[in-house]
Every structure is written in structure tokens, then in C-alpha cells.
Image (cartoon, rainbow, N blue to C red; front, side):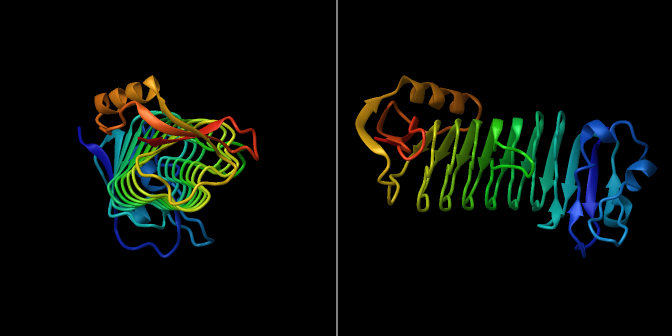
Length: 267
């Protein structure tokens, strides 16, 4: 059987709420019922069948083709299965997802992976502001799982992050790891201003030294970390190879907050 595929017919004239399109819900529906699902966000009625050409029957794997930045809430609260996006995704991609896999070949809007607690979310392109941040109505940001951003991340990546791993392969905006509670963010390239602002716990790992460091972080010198070697091995074994080694310059902070977090600048 082929994956259940949604091909966008034309550029939408309103933002689309694609949160109903997840494997657990669609597995119980007939094709006509899927096409009748409401996805409009204005007073103008819009259904799946109005916006998408629907093909395939295997609801365990969903594929979106030709989507753009107006296609919001793809994979929201995903609990199982796989979602493939051949195009861009709008805001709230993978928000509150608990398990499963989402792979986007294009860019994503704001709050990708917001308050997610499990699963794997991979974005090949750029991610908007507050990736792995706080979903509306929640108190914490990302709470588990793995989020990979292939290119640049906007401001406040990992805001109030509680657990999990974020990998940013491109540049990151200002306030990266802002108000972070725990978890790990790995930055391969440069970061903007005020990284680690109000960091309470958790680790910010930098392959490249930040252009500036907040004065409220204390320099502890270069330290050996077995944890970095273990992380490097895990990343290699899971198809995300990154050279970390075992030595890093450690800065503790933010001393203006709880102060038990750390910046590790690979030596």
C-alpha cells in the first residue's frame, strides 16, 4: 500500500490548520471522511478536499507535497507514525508531538517543535523563531525528543526548554537557549546576542566560540568531559555525526538566574 498523500492544489488564500491530519486520526476514516475534514481558519469554509488532492491508503505514513508557509500545525500532537513534507511548513510544526517522526525537506515557521515531549523532528531548511519553545497554554518548551535544524534557526531557539536535544547546523538568532530549564542544544555555527540568557540548567554546546558571552557566566577553564565522547558516539550511531572530542571550555551560568547551566565551547 502507498502512503496517504496530500498534494496542495493551489496556493491557499488563508492559513490552513492541518492538525487533524495525523495517522492516529486518519486510520479510522474513509477517504470521503478525510476529504470532508475542516482545515480553514477564517469564516470561509475550507475542507481537505478543497485544498488537497488526496491519494494513497496507508495512514501510518503521511506525505504532504507542495505545501508552503501557510500550512500550520503539521504533525501537532503526533503520537505515532511518520510524516514527510515535500515543501515548506508553517507555524507550530510538530507542536506538542509525543512520538513518531516528522521530516521536512524545506523550511518551517515559528514554534517548530514547541513543547514537544518525544519523537524525532528534522527540518532540512531554516526554522523560524522560538523553535523548541513554549506552546501557547504551556509553561515549558521542548520536553523531550530530538529536533534537528539543517540551516538557520530564528531567535529564542529552545526558550524554556525542559528536556531533549536540539541540533542547529546553521546560525542561530539572539537569545538562543533563553530561560532554558534543562536539556541540550548543540550549535555548529555562530549564535546571536545573549545566548543562555537566564539559563537555569542544561547545556549549550558550541563548535564555534560565540562572538560575545554574557558577563553573568563564570569561566571554569578547559575541562575533560566523558559525556561529550558519549554524545559524539550516540550522534554517530544515529546518523548525525558531529566531531566533539572530550575537551571543552566550560562557562557556568546564568548567575543572574539559578546559575547551574553551562556553556561548553569545544576546545
